[in-house]
Length: 261
Length: 360
Ligand SMILES: Nc1ncnc2c1ncn2[C@@H]1O[C@H](COP(=O)(O)OP(=O)(O)OP(=O)(O)O)[C@@H](O)[C@H]1O
Ligand SMILES: [Mg+2]
Image 1 (cartoon, rainbow over the protein chains, first blue to last red):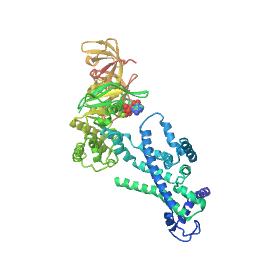
Image 2: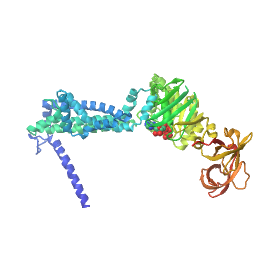
Image 3: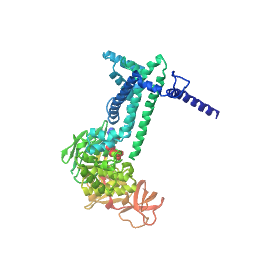
Image 4: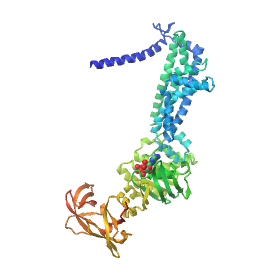
């Protein structure tokens, strides 16, 4: 019994250690003090207003948002096509391609970042938004493929065969049968991709063109000068987006699923 | 409506040859069953007719036209699967109307056709439900409705009844056959269930190991099996080694180890010369057990009941005659014979068929 008590205590401490900083950021975002730390001097939204007025941050925010959305679009599109090929067709080198698609998860991000950079040097291509988009898509792709593949395996191929026997071309079959059945996984994959892109910092630092900031690199840059209370507010916004969007999507998916049956 | 023809069709999956040189026809408007044990290539043949697999060799003809290179969605076939394969995200109405959309049928015409199809499968008024809200039997009816509403040239059914429970299966097979008869569509039905095949088919194609073993009407295949495989696959059969001892105008005398000499009618023992050896086939239900001492019709031998499988009106007996293990399916009059009972096993020569000894 004593041992279990200790384990319980230890577990609680681990969770406190993990979540306390997040809780602190969330609280301090509303602190009406000049400095980004304790003590709390009263409730205020001033740092959020400051945030909205800070052009650099707004610009970084827009960059992150469009980068995240585009990454989601690219990674999801490629992910769906790759999953279809891997699950529905037999061809030589399938295992190799699977490994290659999944490998960005396994390779340390720094290595991946440097590798892509060297490759572009060799091609004499400058760093650009497009490169950043490409890089983020590579990092996000494995997650999309894993999620979509898992779902696709569960969709019986008889559905597609039935549709085709009834007169639907392969493309029409994809649009009317496969894609709708795949939709939950497509949403989940797109969300993963967006979130992964939205809070990526390591690779982004390597790949971004000079002068371009995403929210994480912007925060990183600001931290080098001082801990501004604005950063707490920005942290709050990021947490809301990266946690809130998937939760909302999950709730929506459940709502629609319930409406159907 | 159209007949289907397979000409020397071969299908290999890598090293496995699933279909070996199959040459069969499916007559226009008929109900033909592909019957055989698991893995004998039934589904593969059906999928090649459907256009889901390409034959490795040979030709497939529908209505006299070679369709090898026609993609499935241009073949106008109705396909019914074992697991129904109704689109789960679409209502029953949308499921049935799915194929009509690609045939340029207007919305209002489609609604009428869907209604008529639902009437045919006796499930009117379920248009707005989703597949999961129906029972297995109902789902299979919808799958059938979806396949026939497009007025296919050929209806392909791959073990459509095997996911249903026993009672429903028998009910559905009567109904399925009636629907097929009514709309007169050429149907190819796949099953490994011999009673299904016997009950429903105009013609049965018995297969084993990728090859056609026999083609014929149900009673033909059942009563005159072309070889031992067909004999033992369709119902339980007893197979005895025999040699031809002599013959006269009407019958051939076959000598057996345990039943003495059996005079089998000539029509049942074709092309067996004097002295040649053969195999005598007696169906389990034709092997009669009687109390020792009673009058025997045909030939008889003493035996002992080893085990009884009681099935209500009938019983299946496992009998030992000398070193021979035999099976008998008999109607029960009074009480069934118990295990250990001494009986006389009788064979009526009219019920025998004879095959040449198989060259091993
Ligand atoms: N896509 C495939 N790849 C490799 N081998 C296959 C494939 N499809 C079928 N086979 C093989 O071909 C043979 C025939 O298979 P088929 O599915 O036609 O049998 P079946 O008669 O329908 O059996 P069952 O009654 O079990 O459905 C089997 O040995 C099977 O393993
Ligand atoms: Mg099969």
